[in-house]
Image 1 (cartoon, rainbow, N blue to C red):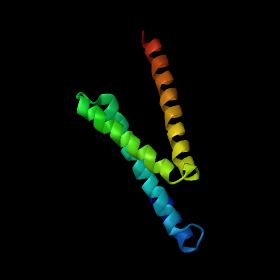
Image 2 (cartoon, one colour; image 1 turned 90 degrees about the vertical axis):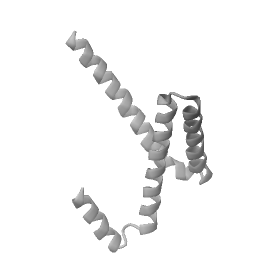
Image 3 (cartoon, one colour; image 1 turned 135 degrees about the vertical axis):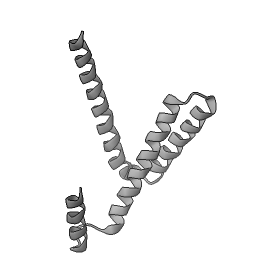
Image 4 (tube, helix red, strand yellow; image 1 turned 30 degrees about the vertical axis):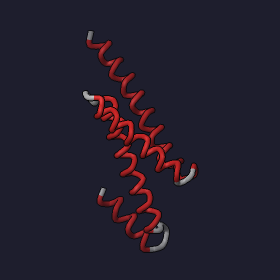
Length: 102
């Protein structure tokens, strides 16, 4: 991880990346984490107000992403689709492993 960060810092110093663009991506990543936490609250909340708060959080995150424009939603959308794909694939692998254990 440190090596990647050093490379990014050097490339940013050389003008390959703009600091404002990197900070914008970092902000989007945190927003994705907040959205994931809100989804978890919706799915795992044991009280109605937990679920309501989670739904509000999900709506807020979705509104913020699409409020910036569809082109700004492509990066987080790709990350979300990748995460869903990996989760589905992981679920299939766990099911196959359970079948072998029997």
